[in-house]
Length: 325
Image (tube, rainbow, N blue to C red; front, side, top):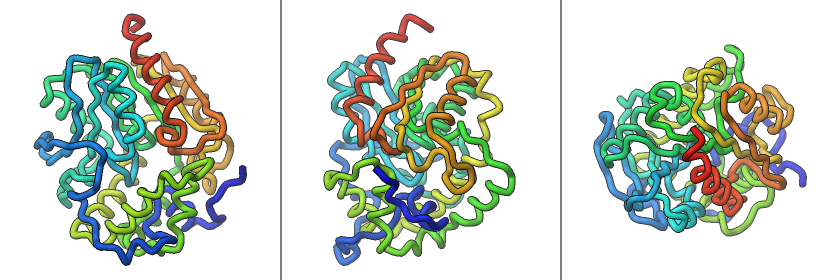
């Protein structure tokens, strides 16, 4: 199936940020505030590492799994995974990273990969958890890699879903991305691009993901959207500055990498090109103890598009590896 996104730089960046408009004109619907995003689960809140953090916790005595979302998304993007993982006996925690979802969005937040890793660990400690399986999607994967470098004893195992962090950017490439993805750019994204841009994160688009379009469109005029756009901009810079590629060989934490064969975002098609499989195999080879699963007919949002396969792989890995570390 051919790629859906347009052959323009702006279209690619909008794809990466999941867009801000809608073919169904959700902008005429009432404004949605970030605190009112309709997650299909309840959330709690805590102040950890100097930030107000919203999170879901299934509680219980099972092995803890912490789910860490990617750029410009939130804990709600795990809605197709949480129940299945709970039913497998895990204690599931899904965090809204600072700047995203229902968490605080202070302009003074020191957005960085290390700050995010430290915040996730602080939340786990707040919940009485000293060690967990970290599951990160995209930017969340790079945060997980950073955590494994900074405090490996807190990361029992890691599952990296279409992770950032395996692709190296030259200084000029990084500066281009940093200068292109500004808060103003994010806020002024034309709405007629939304459907194609979001669909480009998938191999086969389905109407069951229509909520992503409605949510993003109705959030644009919200009180906190300026702060959200700032967080996204700073997060792009944080991924570029939080370089982990040259340190992967230092990570001994057992890792499972899962990616889609048809990921339109990895590698960056305008700056690098090539195959997603090649990038993931390079990451696997650099890590000391990593397995790789490539899912056919699957794009970047693998936890949604292939949720059953991903949930099963996480379950088998988390349980089987418990005695192999």
